[in-house]
Every structure is written in structure tokens, then in C-alpha cells.
Image 1 (cartoon, rainbow, N blue to C red):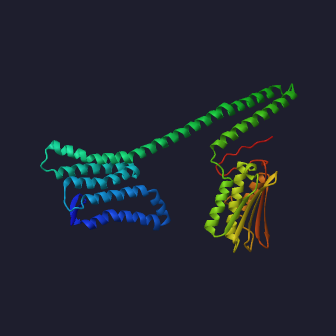
Image 2 (image 1 turned 90 degrees about the vertical axis):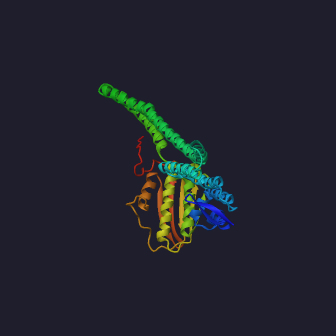
Image 3 (image 1 turned 135 degrees about the horizontal axis):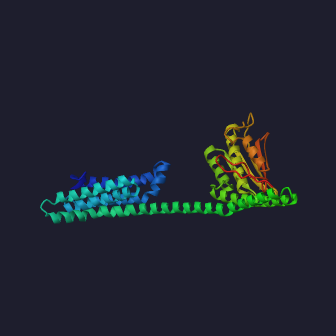
Length: 380
């Protein structure tokens, strides 16, 4: 028994069993093999695309069954071709670049129409046109199935951009309404103090006190506005993830303990400092702690300060080398910790190296800003 299958629009007689195996079993088998035996990245993609792969395998199976009896019928051949064409077109409309998707859809529709006309040589013009339009309906359905999610995503992305724009305008209004008002008050007080400086020095002192209060209020408004513009700073959750990645990638057992009250005691800036210090400590373990098998990270709060301790059991011939130029070495981190009112120390013992950082709560002053990050100086 043979079956007629379509290769580039031309019916080719092949054994039905062979065609069925190739068109139906092979895609399904490849899908299963990919899900369970492929590379990790490919397996993740295959799991996300399992529904689409199953749909394509089902379409090929239906196409094979339509021609399994060995006869060649134009209507069944067209329907079998549509079963294969529709999922491919839908995938193109969904994921291909827009120009390529539209061009491919137009070519597929035109090919289907011309193919239909070629299979009906004795039909009148209107009959051929009607049949061509009918068999182009699957292409239209594929465009709808693949294009609607794409259109929905574009609308969602546009809505996100509009929301971001509205938030930027709101922040600009906050700056104008609050900060500009405070600055205007400072200017007015300074002008008044200049006019009465010779006649009433006490009034000048009072004006300076008012200027100080208004200036602090303006800085508070700026802090709030700039804080809304910044990306979220890393905190203790990111520290836990950092420890987990270090253990997975480095082959060194790493444990972290977070004491009671630490989460509430750490400010955003202090939590970011903790993250930076832990990152540097783990980097030094990789570089200098020869034979280290264990790293313990502890965060504790005693009511006045948060103490971070990072200890390893590796032997090191020399202390970690400071790396000032990159801004992330121990020297730079020590300066940043001191700017927050804390202290950073490293000690060597018979059991390995220990790094200890102490951060008061709240910090005395904000830590230095990173590259490109605005800094607000405050004096009291």
C-alpha cells in the first residue's frame, strides 16, 4: 500500500507505513527525547514549547492518516496540506519578525490559491476563485491565532510605557510642587536677612534657623523623589541567593544564618553594603583560601548594630589583596562601611580567615553613591 504525500506542492507516492512513521512518530519521538535527554537549556525550552510541539505532531499525524489508504484525492490532499501549514504559519505570525511573518503569510496564501486553481483545471473562474478563497481560510485562521497574542503583547508593552511616562510626570510635579516651594522659601528668607543684617543681627540668626529647617525639608523631598527613581537595592534576600550560587558553582559548602531583628534593623543602604561585603568576601575565598571546604556567613543584631561575619576554613599564604581601582576591593568597602558609621576588619587564625563588618542602625550618614548615582549631602 502506498500513500501520496506532498513535497513542495508536488504529490509523491511513498509507502504509507513509511510516510506515517516519518510524519507522525518522528516529531513526537524527537519531542520526548528532547524533554528528557537533551541539553539543559534545550530541555527548558522544550518544556515551555511542549504544547506547540504536541500540536505540530498532531497535525502531522492527521495529515498522514488522511492519505494512509493509498489513494490521491485533491480535497484530502489540500486538507492534509492545511494541517501542516496552519501550525507553521501560526508560529510564524506569533514569533517571527513582523515583516518576515507578513511576507511569509502572503506567500503561503498565494501558494494555496494557485495550488487550488491548478488542481481544478475544468472549473469556471468563479468556482476556482471560490475554492481558492475557501482554502485560504486556514491561513487566515493561522494569522488570527498567531497574531492576536502578539497584538496583546504590543498593547501591554505600550501600556507599561505609558505608565512609566505618567510616573515620570508625577515625579516632575512632585519636584516642582514641593522642592521648588521650599527653595523659594529659602531665597525669601535669605533676602530678608540681607536687608536687616546691619540693623537687627538677631533677626538674621532667626532667618538662618528658618533657612536650615526649610533646607532640610527640601532635602527630605529630594531623597524621597530620587529614591523613587533608583532601582531596588540588593538586600538580605539577594545575599541568600548569592550564597546559594556560590555553593552551587564553587564546590565549597556555604551556610548563612540571619539572626532575629536583622531584617527590620537594616536600612536599604546598609543592606546594600552587606551584599557588597559578602560578595567581596566570597571572591577572596575563591582567590586566596586554598583548600577551603566551608564558608559560614552570619548576620546578628544586638540592638545597636548589625554584625556581619564571614569565616572560611581555608589556608591562605597572604592576606587578600586590596583592589581599589575597581571600587569593590576591601579598601574601598572599608571606606564605604566607615562612611556609614561602621567598621570592617579581617583577621587570620589557625582555622582560616574571618571578615567582620559592623554597621550601626541607623547609619550615621548615607554611604557614598555608586557611579552615576546622585548623592544628597545633608548638614545639621
